[in-house]
Amino acid sequence: MTKVLVVEDNPLNMELVIEILVARGFTVHEAINGEDAIKKAEAEEYDLILMDIELPGIDGVEVTKILKAKNKNTPVVALTSYAMKGDRDRFLSAGFDEYLPKPLDITDFLNRVEKYKV
Image 1 (tube, rainbow, N blue to C red):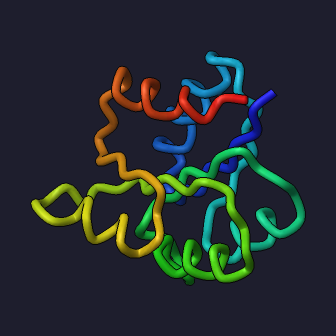
Image 2: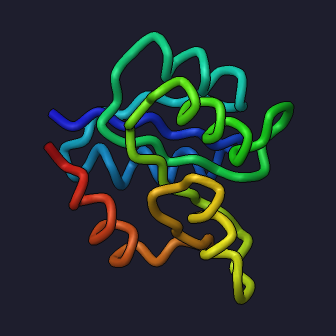
Image 3: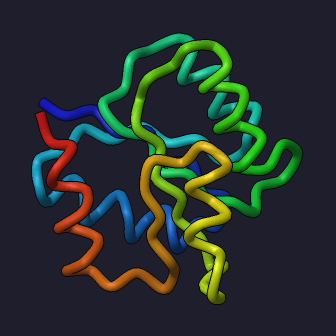
């Protein structure tokens, strides 16, 4: 079963993403800030990490850089309200493997995360 870590500080966004993933058969763990995400990603292996950018404490870009520097090869997808021209390239060049703008288009979201299903 595919295990996903969802890193999101907004409770409504967290609930929505978890509900969608669980309905599709993913096992979901959650982290509400950057420090928690790092701790959980170091303690367990995940097949995918869905990372909000705006997090309290360490932001999603820094968390991703830290995880990648520790040789964590887990794909990290940016889930962000940053949706201006150039944002996708900015996040991909920062080390993210994929970029999904919020509000989420559910069909697009599912199409993209399903490719990580094990």
